[in-house]
Length: 157
Ligand code: NI
View 1 (cartoon, rainbow, N blue to C red):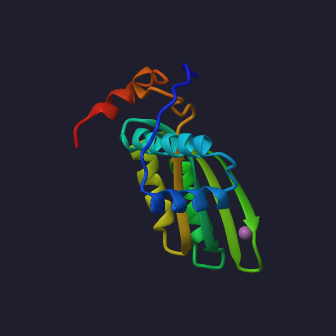
View 2: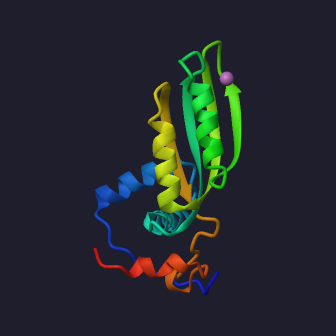
C-alpha cells in the first residue's frame, strides 16, 4: 500500500444520502472504507474485463439432478476443462435440487466461455459467474501486480 492521500469529493446531497444509506445497510461504519472498496471493485472489474487477464472466481449452479443427464454432462465438461476448474463443492439442497460451486482459475476469456457453457447447460436452472483477481490493485493500476494484462487498463474505448 502506498502513501495515503486525502481527497475531497463534491456530491449532490441526495446522492450522498443515498450513498450513506447504501453503505450503512452493508455495515460500513465510515465512508472512506466504502469508497475505497467501490473503487477497488471497479478496478477489479476493469482488470477481469481484459480477455487475457488471469482471473480467479466461482461459478455457482443450481440444478435438478433428476434432469436428464445433467450430472454426467457437468462432470464431463469439467473434466474437459480440468485446467480451469480448481475444485468443486456440492450441496444437496433438498430431494431434487443441487447447489454446486466451482472454483475456477485461468484467462478471463476462457473462464467466461467455460462458465457460459456450464450455466447454459440444459437442466441448469440458475447460474452465476463471479470473477476477481488474486491480487486486486491496492492503488495505482499502472504499478499493479506485474501481470501482463495491466496495459489493457489504459486502452481507449
Ligand atoms: Ni445433489
